[in-house]
Image (tube, rainbow, N blue to C red; front, side, top):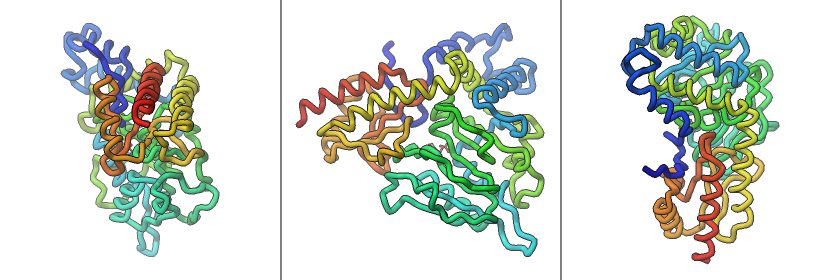
Length: 366
Ligand SMILES: *Cc1c(COP(=O)(O)O)cnc(C)c1O
């Protein structure tokens, strides 16, 4: 058995130590005589798993007491609808709630489009005219002070950008889709009203979505047609156990939280991630063949898109890299080119192997 270096954007690489532990506990979870997949989500064993996962996540991310942590299903995409349904407040005169969306790529564009189904979503800034190669300037946004929230996608998985600086939204809650950067670096949770992410990018298997939401945004007076299961209040009151949760996925996320804690928490994770990104960007910046596609100031530490300028050469690169054990380097189907996702679990050696391969490919194809 040989494991490859997996640069997939998601589902993505998980720490080998975590996979080994999950494998060793597969048939008999700590004397229960069954796997986590098979046990009741109401059992004492599972209660221990979800409570410990939440406690570890709170410790890692420094989640204040005044925030709820929810383990949900439906992917990040379901949150595109759940956020306006839960956070938009109809006005006393009967008009709909409002929200400001900053559109910095495909994911925020989708979220914006979805929000318009439920209320008045406004585009406060967009970088679409620049091919989403940059993040709109946080200091020159057209924000309305009476919006119910301001929405950003903090790390753009497809275009490889991230906010170098958060917008100042005053008293308006900031909502962040952090799917592809969740737990890759420390975040000051108190600056947000809500942070959410699908687990399959950086923290676990597909099927778990984590929502960290401030207490005052967990309310009964949501838009009236909001399905019961999509109300944050429902899941907050039930400790994420209103219905059957993605139990095995939560367990693996919990193992990843422990893995991160053992390695010095999020500040240490950021250091490792900055170092890995530097190895790749330093090479890209001097390469005569490959070119990074995101603006330098806004480049992501997690997702690194690049091109050669020739579709034919790009395709050959992806195929030859795969043959060399460097997997899933093809860019998103909407943009083409290449993309290396270098999440927490990608070791530095993987990035170094990629750079060595790129150097060789460049020498052979100039
Ligand atoms: C992958 C991704 C999504 C969509 O996640 P699903 O879990 O597939 O719904 C949303 N936002 C960002 C930033 C992503 O990277």
